[in-house]
Amino acid sequence: MGRFPVRRNTIVLCAVVFLFAVFAWAGWANWEFRQQAAARLLADAARGELVAVPGNSSSSASSPGTLEYVSPLQGRTAPAFALNNVSGSKVPLSSYRGKALLINFWATWCAPCKIETPWIIELRNKYASQGFEVLGIDTEGDDLKPDDKVGWSKTKTDVNKFIQEEKIPYPILLDGDSISVYYGGLDELPTSFFVDRKGNVVAAQVGLTSESDLEDKIKKALAE
Image: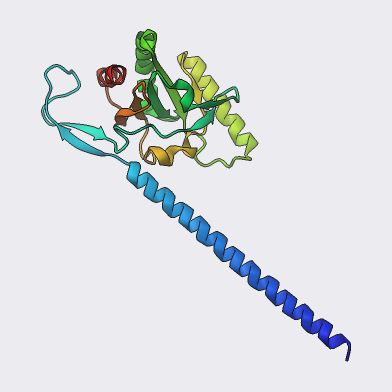
């Protein structure tokens, strides 16, 4: 007779624990769903579009019927971030306040990025004395987990090799995919954002463009 209450209490306790586990799982799943939904909405909100721009005889980059990428971030403060460089030091975007910036999302496997990189190096060296800098943000690790030491080690090796081969003089930051949602999701590489000295996005570019087009946008960032 004395054993029955103990067994019943045990069953009740197990049932309560099970219910709490179900509720906890449901809450976590719901939270993850909300986070994913928020990320998708944020990416969509930051995603730009191609629009036709009128010709401009003073610009080598524009002509009648030219399509230009216009980002919703234009005119707004560039989304803040802090990423590690190849040496492992944390580099915040805020440390470049007061400089005109080209934030360039790229990857070592991206063929258009390889074409564009020498142009960026040349333009960076040309305008550095005027307060211009480039932040190259590598997006190799889009499928890597934070604890994947082997994967991240290989990424750093590949990036360092690219830096040395191209003689890149500007900072290269890692794990660009962790901030990609704030910059529109990065549907195509390279993707670049041009930021003025006050930290505002003044122009954006998706895909391979021309060196003259890049220079026009750099001049705009310096002039604002």
